[in-house]
Image (cartoon, rainbow, N blue to C red; front, side, top):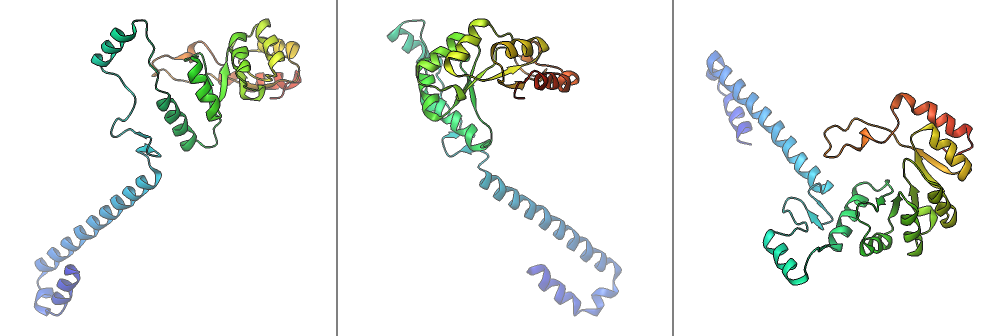
Length: 239
């Protein structure tokens, strides 16, 4: 507003415009004003965008900016050990719920499969079942344990890279028909044990910065992916 008023005032002064130095100063001031306005507008738009996306929290349950996550300090750990003895496992089911719901909110089209090898504690499994999670299983024991807890076959994926006969039997008994593969030998085994099963190809990717790089052990190379998928289709599997 003041810039506009100032410009109107100057526009009425013919003497001002006859002086090249004054004109140059005016142009420079106007230029920096416009540049500053653009940057300010960009900043405000980014603030609005980040607020709308709720990028700093998941429905208010996990506020990463305030570090509101479950954690124990050394004093608390020692006190719990004195009271309950060791070894001791401390779980926060509220944190498990918050993590799952955060994933579901920000990746709504992704189906979450909890790998129970990470922690097969029954309370965690019951919590994940109630939340509607699906499960990544790698052994007959894991398949049967979840089945006994009421999980139906369509919520499983049998993801052992080297599947066993007892694992396939558990799949048949519990109605598990979805599994992964990363080699031609697994295709032949699946075709024999579970004809028509739904299969997903596990790809090896560059993840060298990971704390534990599982791609050194598992996954098919990209150069072999199409060939393996075609072999799975030829074997009558649902690729």
